Amino acid sequence: MSKPPSPPDLRCTDVLADALIGHEGALAARLDYRRAVLELVYDPRLLDHDQAARWAQEAGRRVWEQVQQCPLAGTGFCHPCVTKMREELTTFFGHPPRVVLEGEVLSVRLPRRADTTARVVAKIAAAPASAARPHPTHPSHPSRKAALAAGALFLFLLLTLFALLWLASPHAFA
Image (cartoon, rainbow, N blue to C red; front, side, top):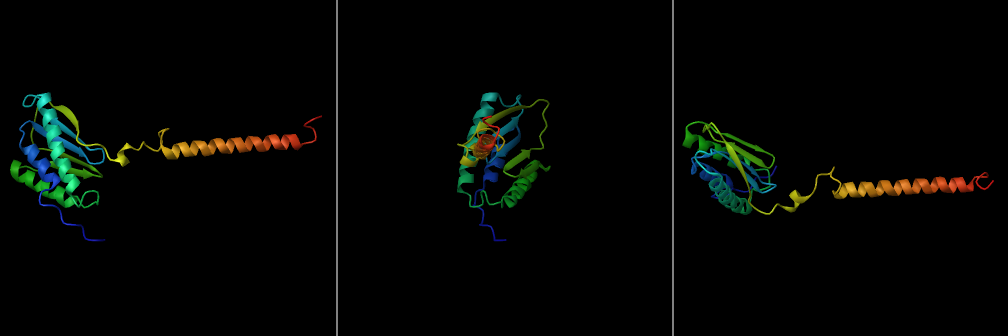
């Protein structure tokens, strides 16, 4: 296995951690790198919806700028950055947050409590081309269209073969 490139001085996880620490009403965040979406869970008693939406959009934009500059992005070497983020948040809060990287989704749940929660989703960049591709079972997926075309061609050829065999049989014109 090759050695990963070194992370930049400022990591996307640093930007997200600073943004979460900087807003008392922030409870959790979910960053989907593939879809370029930041979801924020917040305490509506401390942040109203418009404030939360602006916060999520701005924080998401700053995080996305770091993702675009990171030599580690998309290489599978994000775990050291996530571990560093967990350590920094634990130091700040005194209790460990729940920080999980599953595939291309980073989930962070801070050790803050709230009686009620609300959620806001911010599209932070145009989704990459790979994210725009439909699921393979969707009728518009290219491989699905190719399979349907191949099936139709097979059925046409099979029916043509039966028609020719029927025409070639002695009782076809009897």
